[in-house]
Amino acid sequence: MLYRWGQGVSILKSCNGYSLLDALIALSILTVLSSSVLPIYTHLYEERMAILKRKHAVILLDNCWNDLVLNRGIPPREKIVEGVSFSIMETPTELCISYKEQNKNDNLICRSLPHEE
Image 1 (tube, rainbow, N blue to C red):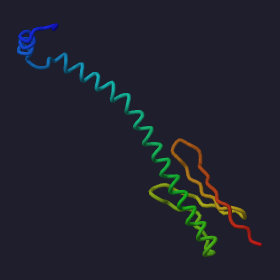
Image 2 (image 1 turned 60 degrees about the vertical axis):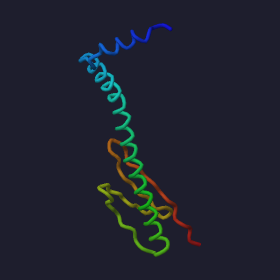
Image 3 (image 1 turned 90 degrees about the vertical axis):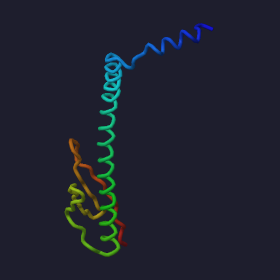
Image 4 (image 1 turned 45 degrees about the vertical axis):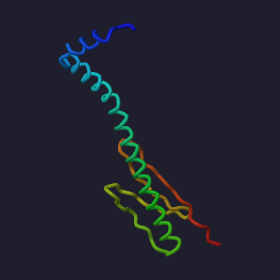
């Protein structure tokens, strides 16, 4: 054995708890770890919002396409969903929807219209 039982017990009895230095070291390690995780979290949040906007655009485009093709309705020119403005454009061959993301260009999603014979 490297140490005797009596010596180990006497070392533990002399401990009075954590020192201020131990607490400061633990706090600095926690600060470094949390500061490295925060940018990743904000990037994931921004990506989640971009995916949510695209999802709303695809659902709105699908609804307008169904209304135009199946019900012969006229789609609205602009629609606002959860604070995001979507512009709907119709060409002879396709139906498109565009929206603007923060700090990015306009996004355009199109769906072709059926050919009439």
